[in-house]
Length: 472
Image (cartoon, rainbow, N blue to C red):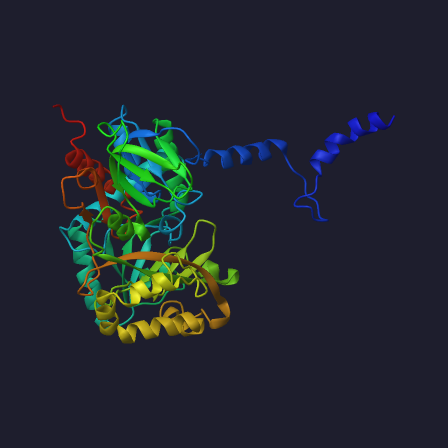
């Protein structure tokens, strides 16, 4: 009898099983649970610990959005190549690619004729096409760049000309009343309206790039922090002249060629093959605030200020998210470690390295007032309310709270200039580390929006540098 009762009650026990060992229970659906498990497994990749030879034609170091997109593009062009991606974290897109505003930019701000401007506009079109083909959720919420005084109106007109020259689609200048037709709670004299600016989860997009790469025959190794590049010493040195080492026993791969896309670690990776540290990566943390739920209806799309040309950052803006929340910000403060998302994340060696760098000292002295202001806003979040109220007066200090943060890998030269273009580097010499390793040391913002266009450029670069796809 007891066995019969157990059989009869087993389905109920499954349906109303406890979650997390707590006292509360919720109904579960075995089909939905299976779908969630398959989704978790979908993003799992290999671990490169343990014995066994791993030989590749090309290894891409860095599993952020640029590295994943580039590996995908190269393999789609050359499906017979054996390619691997090495990522030091337990999943792709753990840092810049997964800690950003989630905006799909249209290419308004960038100097006409520059590579950055072209890649952004091209990347936006490629991104929407890719999102549609892969059924990745996004929202084309649009964007307003709002002028609140006459001085900003003049700067806004300059931005309009930039956008037109950059072929930003359907960009138009609108007046105050039209602003409120698009954003009913927003105030301003004039605004640039970009209807094709959107929002998406770029971390999710990166995971899809990784899945494309794997389906094409690529291999992704997680938890593989590159600690050393060396010239292969054993019998495979002719075919696979570079060996890449990780911190774990037997964690090595051999390869013909290497492309590094290290983001926050890009200068350190370059130094491992004998390249100079310059340009140096200086990490800047951008801290966001969250708008209270009862005020989220006041923001339909992206609302940005007119950027002040004296400073290198865009200023505080309103950004809706895919989950319905609204982010406000970010500010820009020096991160106390390369992957430091709070004031409590401190690495004294990394901090000292940044503070003693001549380029940082020169930049800090130039923008000391701006820097102190940003630090004050970080400590006292109510100081940002005044900036927010220029656009939506109804927002008060009681409507905001601290939110997430991201860290930007800002490349900086010895003169204190922020490097605003792509930087590729190779070591000097005739050995394998000089001839076979190419470093992408800077992929400037907006790297996520431009990722598919950047990937095409990176594939072209790899084909040229390593003579891939060319007959002998």
